[in-house]
Length: 279
Image (cartoon, rainbow, N blue to C red; front, side, top):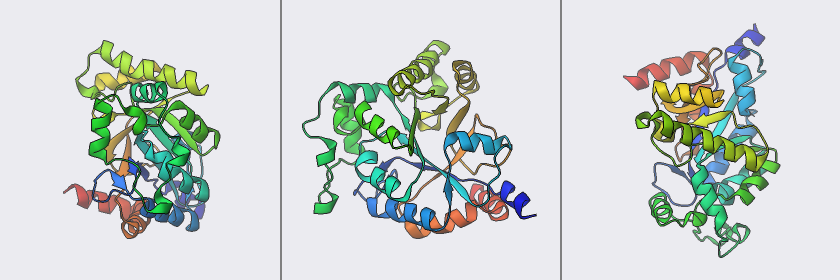
């Protein structure tokens, strides 16, 4: 009976973007809060799954002996390395980061004025990365290297065995309004670049802005993607659609996080809560 219950225990797929000291941004979690959340997962015995393991669970091939979560990041911001990666290593948190290859390529083409290893200003109480709004402006000015992970840092994180990198398209386009040819470029070229740079398969995709269409899903399948992550709120169960994986937006609050983890990993409470939330 216990084994059956564990197999039915739902899995929340957590969605992060930035981890940096700028408070009050809807897509930013502060380093102190992020570490508190990861510490809670570690000390409470949560298993952080790799995406392959999540897919095995969905297909009924993985039996879990306890609660599990999946940690994901969108966009591939530099602060993921500066502020989040130390906590990932400290608490042995498996993570998937979905990167935008145009930005990564531009960030890798220019040598930054200072190594990111020297940018860790949190110990001095200094904010060393821009806000989300400022980061977007820098990207518009082709100064991606100031705010985006380059291939060197991506390889370092990947070599840790904790962080996997998958596709968030080529240019961060909204995929619900693109032609088939445009979709082929956004999904196919980005997949190829990641596979060439990391010498690993890239079978997983995340939609920018959560925007997609039936045509986009078919193009993604044809391109070789085996699972696709959305911004649709919800949890993952055995038998969930791997081409429309739900996620949970994480708030900048440890107490909120602890309560939601207890809810979202309970088959009864999660279903009730999500139904109420949609009303």
